[in-house]
Length: 448
Image (tube, rainbow, N blue to C red; front, side, top):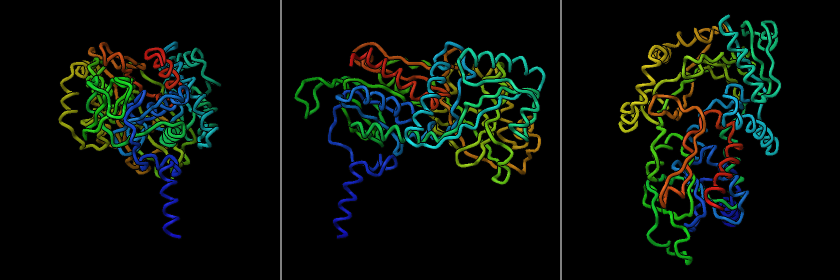
């Protein structure tokens, strides 16, 4: 009886019965040919693969992921905010996709029973000179068709956030929070249930045109692109879509496409409110962005588990997946510091950069930033928390590439590849909307 039960359980796991958590435990299929391979199992790659297989159920799709887990890097280390689309330039892809994506995200979570909280956001002006920028932000949000925005005064701020002090705030009740790793795993489950294949522990190191057909293929060079991993394993496919985040520029180079824009990693370190102090924050509390600085600044972010994250800062990471202060990769470090675009960015923002490094070293300096909004917060109320690494795309003039970038290449292999080169925040919020656009682009480019 025990042996029979064990056999039934093994069959259940092989069929995917273990749910999203079992995805990387499923043995690899023998199949090595696919119509489209998506490189990268972050939230954008999984959403795109899901959209593609739902649109083209007769085709074979694979997702290739170098880690043993899904959504292991940016998708699993973000703040968890469902953004409403306030900040972004009207008419930009960021603005359109964020507004669409937020609505799709809430709808998807409702359909799948994924918990979220629509806890809202206050963007708070604490000084007089911030009020014109706040009002301009309000107008921008209206242009972007963000739902339910309104400007509120000091008394209304305290009614919503009793411990927060400010002169005026932009109230965005449509902003929410969710666990994006859970969302990404649900996308993966949808993809597998629709017939897609997920290969983990598959680090892509080479892409080239095949010189001959795979052994089991009798249709000639129907699958002309060969994708190899670091172990020498290979698959054959007709087309490739890369959603590689921190490695998007390197995958582009591997395929013979342009290395620009380059990825420079910035680590963001969060602080945590001690559990007994989390009552001080009900929803998201954000600063008014200063256009003179490249990053947003410290904010208060409640989490689905009841914790509250504070931050993050933004400092150069010495490793693309370096979540700890002493993590170091010679290759990643040299790639960053030898890139002229980084030095142009640093020189333009030298004092800001020094301030970020100083605050990264001294908790008291970070607490001063937080006290601008909640004066009651003290050094004794906080703990050091998790970190994330942002894949910041930079051009050669040192400008942050602020919008989504999609491109391919030329020649036999370049024309068969679509690179998602830059998918910055709010990519997680926008993932389903991005996926629809990628699927449209794939259909047009590759004539699926």
